Length: 152
Image 1 (tube, one colour):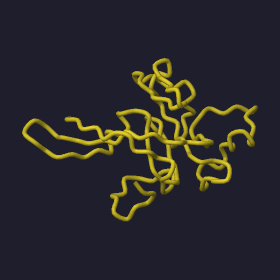
Image 2 (cartoon, helix red, strand yellow; image 1 turned 30 degrees about the vertical axis):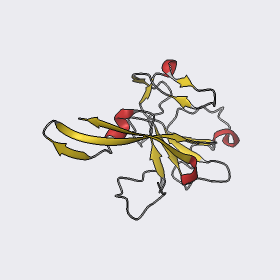
Image 3 (cartoon, one colour; image 1 turned 90 degrees about the vertical axis):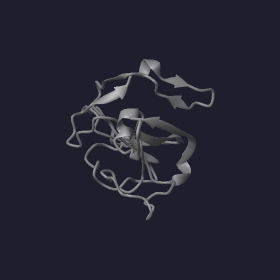
Image 4 (spheres, helix red, strand yellow; image 1 turned 180 degrees about the vertical axis):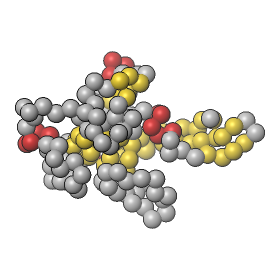
């Protein structure tokens, strides 16, 4: 898994060249292609553990009280990420996994398992994301955990 691999087909780079991940199956499904068979299309998806570090959020509701030092402000959402301050970027979507059903492992890893619900913090940005996207710019932040095979 590489950032900007020359062998990989590009599917979009709204937030720059990086490794794009999501916390919902529905988002990732849009980027899956599979092998056609008599019983449907057989697809594969990676389930990864991603070390997000300090996250720069894009597309959240911000108030006048928001401190630029705390979250990076929203006037620079289109600029390249300041990698000295942030290790990842999160595009906030309209729909999120219900946080009441997220489990946290002993190591601190969070696994979102809830049904998709409306995100009350969605800022209605022009990005128009339906689901959260998490982008990291260093492949060392991603650990491949499982290869999931499914039919659609």
